[in-house]
Image (cartoon, rainbow, N blue to C red; front, side, top):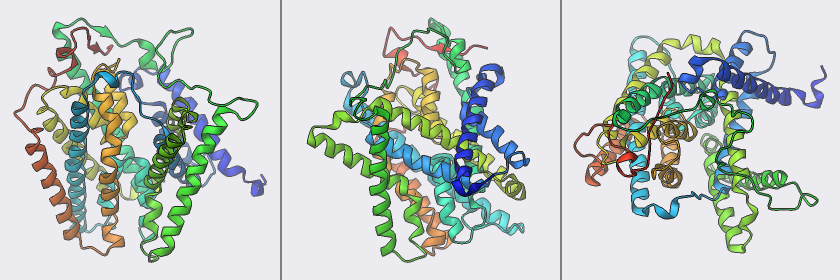
Length: 476
């Protein structure tokens, strides 16, 4: 085949689409996948990486890495352009929403440093046992679990510039382990909570088509994030215009990052490309504000942008998995599994510990935060939807505020993970910084009355605050 026409990247993109479709079919047909609500992108991406690593698909892993990296950037730009509106926002107390969102931020201030310290300590232990691990190896635990595959891949590319060979595959594997913990421990947590919660309540079963992930023909359902035309089709297609806006933001972001990189030393300028997604989010928010000032913000269609965000995340996750080189993973399988296992269990215990000390909505907030800090916002939203299917609680509104509160912390944490390679820090210095951050977060949790006496995690819920609310139960 003549590759001069550039077919290979398009074929890689198409293959991700093929495995996404296969994932949809497998989810609809296999009960075990339904019980854990595994998304099609995870199913299809896992199958895709098997085919690639067995040699059935002859394409470079870098194609899938680049697709995953670019869709991360696109998803954050799309989020920044989307106006954050919820149907019941006016009826929800703003102070309650802010406190709930800030609690989520403080939990990140505990969980990210905790995972970083676990990774640092265990890597030191493996080094003493004779393993030759890169100093930043263990930092993929918080990057993969808390930040997700896109950010893990971004920083992996930075690490590779400093001599960490095959960092991309290792970082993506840690992100995959995060998803495994998210669904295979998160779902039993939800099942236990729902069984106890609904003992004296009217039960509404989650319908079979929700578990299968495919809506039946002519099904009536409430549409969320519906797209609306903002321009005449004879002028420009609505989707084309929404994507064009993303292109404008992307080009501005690239120009900013490129300009900044020229001002930085060669050994540090790589970092700016690792946080491209964050810069893109900021530029998108500023553009959205500018359009609002000009009175043309209505041209940004939230429904279409939401679909672009979802599309980008699905392709990013599947592409992430298909970029993993299993030969590299096998060489490091012992430290990866042990670091992932210890980090995953302590993450679950710490989140449940603080979740039980919430005054209300403990299960909703706990499963949401657990889903976010072992996967992404989308996986947290999926777990939340199971315990609060109609989003009657204010937790969804808290999630809407959360990205803007957590963004500075996210950038700071990501920059800290480059400290060992870009800033020349010693391991003990980085560990000390993460330790201080965790202590400060714990003090704030206590001082703001987020850390009270333990309560039953499964009896604090929206039912006590909404007499008409019914809790769902999972089908067996």
